[in-house]
Length: 597
Image (cartoon, rainbow, N blue to C red):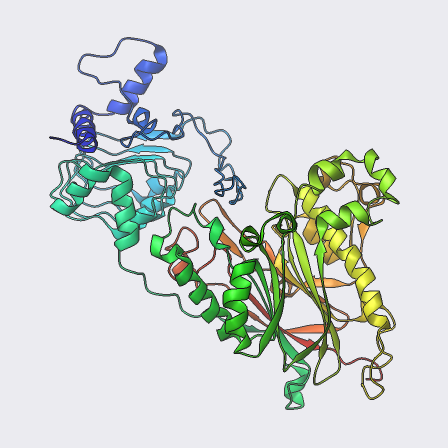
């Protein structure tokens, strides 16, 4: 008995073989658009119609009409319904363009002009029933394609670059001479319809298609394909000669890592990642090996759940001279002990031989918004600002703060780890959250400055105010360099009517603007920021940073970004070599010499 999946293959092949006349799809679309009767022998069923429901009987978004769609994006959802991926809109290449489907079928073409692949606005390309013996790898430049039909040609192989076509929903390769499928096709996580009938493919592929359909083929290629070669190590960028090198000593030098490690409970949506590479046992070991290899003096890790902190990271890192401080998101307060262990938060680790802990505190943005005077003069005034209740107070993001003393030099240091809200439509909330954080840090820093120091400390009398204490702030800020969050941190102020505020009302922040006195700069701002710190198929940009106080610290070195050649072959993280959708940041700092110290 023929399976439903293979019946679908036969149906696809029948449709394909009926479309061998020149420009079949274009003529069919034109006839339909005019509402006329179909020409004799012309099948009007558009392959795109098969995407609704697909061969697996699964509901799926429509591929859309043949009209041009130059911008748009899709947001994946976390299992809890909490959005994960940010939407990054494609910029319009030609606003005058009013077509996005190209039909070159049935014309006996033997070679494709590479100029075709500059038409990166196309979402449908039909090059079926020609005489093509190869498909150029440059086809991957057509990144908006949802439908690619190369049926009825003489292809013996598909280029591995086809796996980079992240928007493909339908790929028809019927009636060629293909004996295998490239494992890179396992990255086609959106592919719903794969037509393979009429190729001398191995029985194992045909049987899998018959049993599990397109999703089964893609899953098998993804999970059982060879592991790609790892990238070359990331470069170490030296910014300036350290003062300590001149003196042949490392007394005032320390390093900081910031890394969103991707909480295990949020990994259910990465359809392009091999399932084994998403397993927590694999990822956590990769994360541990990576952070240990940096040998940093301070680590700021985000999306660390309590179980991971207590049962894995702290026991393992304590063997490397680290101790730490962890705090979960505010929702943990209302949960049972078992559920609380699954809540992610922020963890700071530091080397005990390098830093001595003076104090540690969390900053819960919900609590600060509702109980401090940073936004309103008193609690009674909160009722006048419903946006505080409806937007800021619904987000339970947090930060952790450690007040440290450098063992060898006596310098004090405020180490902060922050994770702001993820939602791209809540730029106002992120701006308020970082404003609340900086406001709290002002109060904390001033208290820290007043703590007595030993009489023999070389730093005694140096910290006359909190803003003079060195500070580093690592974190996932979910904000790009053109955001209000970045402006506030780097420039020291934003106006209350900043575009990110979007017209919402947040008391003092929107009436007077937001300011802070710390003189901060992003460590990677010294090289113009990395091109990305978060990489998924729908988003690739810088949103993670390590900020530092410029009056008391200098940046000596930075870890560069991943190898560009390697990146040209992946559509997103996590994968076999990068265990999170974020990359780690590593900055080396040196305390500046202070007057009289």
